[in-house]
Amino acid sequence: MTRQRLFLNGLRAFEAAARHGSFTAAAAELHVTQAAVSQQVRLLEKRLGFALFRRHANRLELTDRGRAFQPRLTDAFDAIERLIEEATLQSGLVLTVGVAPAFGLHWLIPRLKQFSRRYPQVQVHVAAGGATRSLNDDWTCTVRRGRGDWPGYVAEELFTTTLVPVCAPAMATGLRKQSDLRNATLIVVPHLRQQWTWWFDAVGVSKPITGGGEVLFENSAMAMQAVLDGVGVAIAQLPYVSDALAAGQLVCPFPMVGREYEKWYLAYRPIRRKDPALSVFREWLHAEATAQRQTYREMGFNKVGN
Image 1 (tube, rainbow, N blue to C red):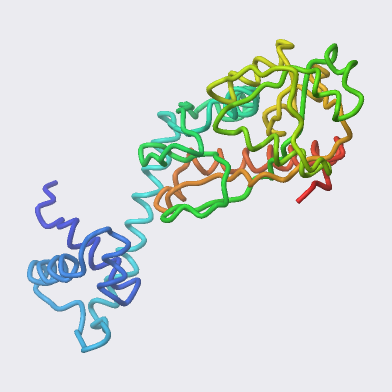
Image 2 (image 1 turned 180 degrees about the vertical axis):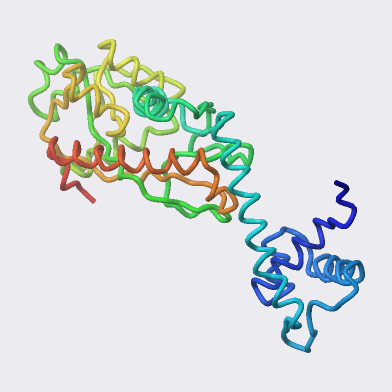
């Protein structure tokens, strides 16, 4: 069977315009210009030999033939989309998620084993991308902290992040009050140094305490490994250390008071909303975020400083 009469660009343009009642709205959905949609519809009408729309100054009106044609055409496109999804599920899905290295190492990656067991058909690629890096359109989605105001992206809140001081259990024996930090080695990430100031402010210490020494690390991932190895005391975002705190690998040597520090979001382009891999990842990630919030409450972080 030959399919010489299939004019897919024109059919897509007409179906979108008929569904929206507007060439402009159809153009936005198809990511082309309004003029391109109008031209494709005219070419389709020429091929079919009859008009699909009556064009008025401020609106489109379907002809009787156009009104009869559109529902079955929409059903056909929906069937093709379902067929593509089924074929993709059978052949495997690919999910690329951009995350900051520290978040990936200390929160996401330890949980991915559960995700892979539940969704073995999804191949996960983890890409490095933190709050200071631009969002990448090659990613399926990103998990990052911020205020959720990334133009052109859907941002779904997961959980807050709170700043807390942490250290190895052996080091905590010499830390009974905040002033004891004068004798401790402080772990500092230079571009995040202000996090110490924020925490001191949250616990009512007006003037930041200078430690007995400092060890500087370029990023949070290295700083978190250093605190696990007993190098010193670090200010950490709670998601980075919640698992280590629960396992007893790290402790918070002072009362459980912290400062809420932005929030974590799942962010993605609206066009990817129906991506099958993203759909299952979203469902799983929100369930994990609910569990994370419960962990906060169990650790006493239901109330934080402002």
